[in-house]
Image (cartoon, rainbow, N blue to C red; front, side, top):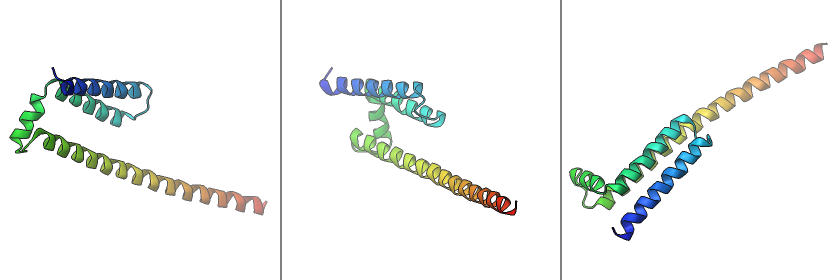
Length: 116
C-alpha cells in the first residue's frame, strides 16, 4: 500500500469521525446530518475501493479520475450553496414577517396604553 492510499483512508475515516461527533453533539439538523454522513461514507468507500471512482470516471467519459472527483466536488458544492441560499431566504422572510407582527403588536399596545 502506498502513502497516498493510506492517507486517503486516514483522511476519510477522520472526516467520518468528525461528522459522527458533530451529529452526536446535535451540531447539524437531521437533514444535514444525513447528507454529511452520506458524504463521509462515500469518501470512506472511495478511499478503500479506489476502483469504484475510477470505473465511474471511465463510464462517464472523464479523462482522469481526478477530473471526475473535482467535477463531483464542484457539483456538490453548488448544490450545497443553492440549498443554503434557499434556507437563508426562507429564514429572512420569516424574520421580516415576525418583525412586522411585533411592530403591529407594539403599536396596538402603545395605543391601548394611551387610551387608558
